[in-house]
Length: 195
Length: 170
Image (tube, rainbow over all chains, first blue to last red; front, side):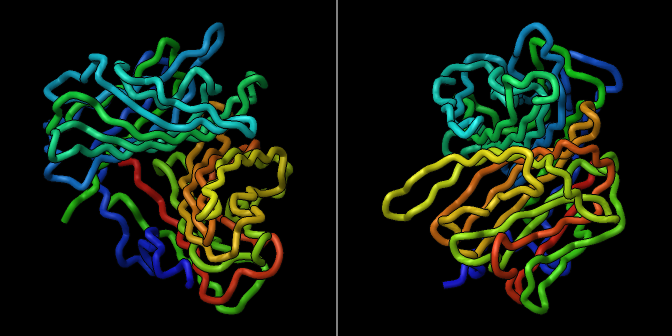
């Protein structure tokens, strides 16, 4: 049987069916800074979208110590920062895997982890569970920083997780770290339409 | 809408590769690119690869690095890991368990701080396998204008296609 007939990615051939994303807002650093933040003008209910998409391209100054980059979401002007984030995934690096399965009770989702080099892109799809009203996400990350530290070669990182806390709308998205983000780091936020 | 189709290249006659060439799009003008590949690529047990570049042609530098994990074998559910460094292309599906029929999506962005070098990750499947992987090209690339899908051995079959999208940043 041909794989083609079950291809879930057959968005388009000639344009029809292009994914229905709408840009919402972004943050790009012009100078080094401690966070990337998007605060939407108004909250958007999870029920009004298929999901949200958060794209990050960023570089951390990891000189001295390696830190995570922490993604938090919320509404009403603040993000959830309690220990209710959970994520499970795998980091593929140097032809081996390490598993991210110990993050129960964490205060954020990690995009970049301290295992990685500090230069990465991430795409996170964020939705919520209509039964629990808890946010859920899946994300993929490509990371490389061999340029500055050969001990941290490039990596593939995929994970999924949820927040053990009610959130029915999204307005605030923040990416922070114990280290500075270099200028030109950026974050874009989209909504994916459901009709 | 934020996704805009740049081009679709369709293989009309079986050949060793399929190229999508288009007017350069600066990485700074978009959030990222998405590349969808679908069809039959490469002889069973050989699979396929891809390269990227600007509209003048893809990079042939020995500077393509990738990390991925492969889940294969419906019965054994075997998992293996695949690292490739300093390659002349991304061997993203060039695995012995690949039987050719392939569907994949590649997300391509830029590392704007470290010399504008491309980073990407992909999700790909073929009969008997699925792959999650990431790639990095150690070459400065400020514009995206060509992607070349190449069979490791054999052909990209007629009817296979590749679509390239840009995802807008405003």
